[in-house]
Length: 189
Image 1 (cartoon, rainbow, N blue to C red):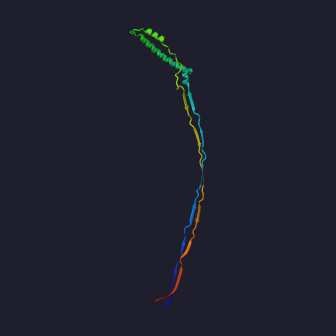
Image 2 (image 1 turned 135 degrees about the horizontal axis):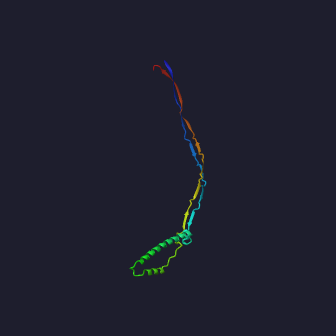
Image 3 (image 1 turned 30 degrees about the vertical axis):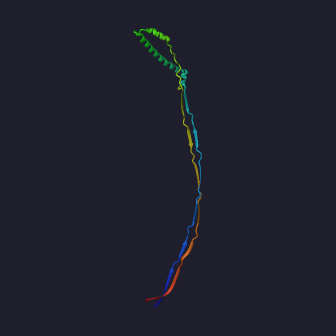
């Protein structure tokens, strides 16, 4: 018996697509930066220093000292003169007790007293450039600073973005197809 057979063969279609990349253009303009720095508030005060001048030694050297200083100077000189007089009396007594000395001790002492010029008491002190004492005490400067912070402002500029797409090319790479045919089918073959 002969039967007929229907054969179907299909081929899939294949699409081709080419899509080149689009063009990107990005522009980013710089932002604006504003900085303002106000001046610092500064106050400087300089208190006066203290000047002390002690000229008492200079006045004393010029015999213009007060009664207490004059009395102190005279007392010191009297003490010195008293010690000198005692030493002189002791020396003269020692001379007079020397019997073996051929010269006359009494005549020598009398001649010496006649020729001695007694020194007057001094009321004035010694003159010197160091008699005036000067002392200066400086005061530190007072500085007050009030800082002021800077003002910073930044304005952002938006970036410019442009995209230009490219043309997409779509094409049929392989056509789809259906092929049908009838053939004899031999059952015993």
